[in-house]
Length: 390
Image (cartoon, rainbow, N blue to C red; front, side, top):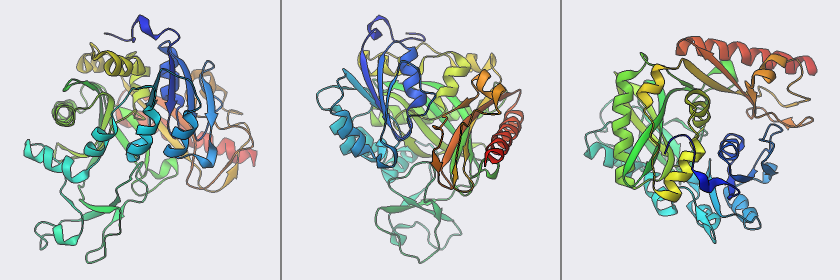
């Protein structure tokens, strides 16, 4: 299989659910599926053929899965943050095909201790994990630790752990790896994987209105950047796909220290960088996801060759620095709208709380640093335009 999901896509009804479905639903619609989407936003730039439903502030995986029970479809696929709610995945799958990892596989791959132990056993890099202070190896060492919620996502509520502080319920400790954040995304089935993208992650970048460990974007690097890291990340993805029996599209968050990528966590579902893959390499990511889940087929795709033909392509999420009520975000940003580089656009008169996403902006550059610089410039232009509306 190459860039599409085959002739069986025509008129197949698919339900796509997640906090934000715009990118996945758009990919599915372009692949020929009849798509209904349920999320927290129903942005105005959803693909015109997608039937979009917004649950707004009432969104949760459980609420979305219950809402989806009333939607007729042959198959369902999920995005963030269903990986933290296997019971919602089980409910979503009732009476229809599940295009994605089953609840048991999700529980296992999202177990931070199991993931760390599995990769270390195979000679791959992963941070140490402890449930509480008593499990910390070599407590006299100078190792720093992060306190992380088990239901993690987007870097929310992650902080440095202070020694001798209690580990709250539903939290764990993970060894802090000082380094550069990155990620690899891949398609899996039958114990095999095909990598489709390698990116540098934007984390806690003040230029986009966030701090700490908050996720705010990705930059797909081109050939000549991160080539050695890609080979190491590919080995990690292959081990995860084989050990945990993953299917469809997945991603692994990494931190690169001294040239070694450490696997921080696995996202066993559609990931934010996948629309960059589709934009840059022309691969129908949802088509590949459907073929892997439905037919057990992996795409014929060579990431190394695709990188040689491309430049750096990135996306950044622009966050609200204070509460604001937006008008038409597109006003005054004609060039970004015309080029398709302004996405996830909220409805006019939407009130956005401080720390919440406003929209997404895209940019390109010869190298990752050039791409980030252009993302920063465009994010500043968006903020200036919104300020002028107030």
